[in-house]
Length: 65
Image (tube, rainbow, N blue to C red):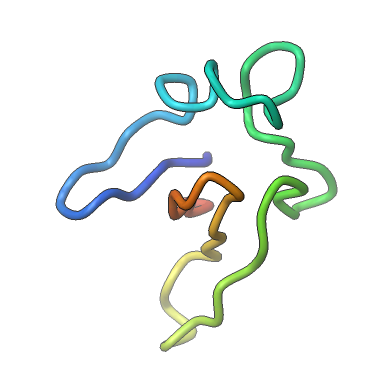
């Protein structure tokens, strides 16, 4: 499940991505093959952290399994 991390909040991508020009036609992040296509991966500090990405709009997105 993808979530957007902002400071001390966790937000559903549907609340943010609906207005993004890079979102897919249903307003979701472009998530394909286990990678965020509208952003880039962020290096993990520990192996226990979820995969994280920074989208083009500057939000941090985490893949919570």
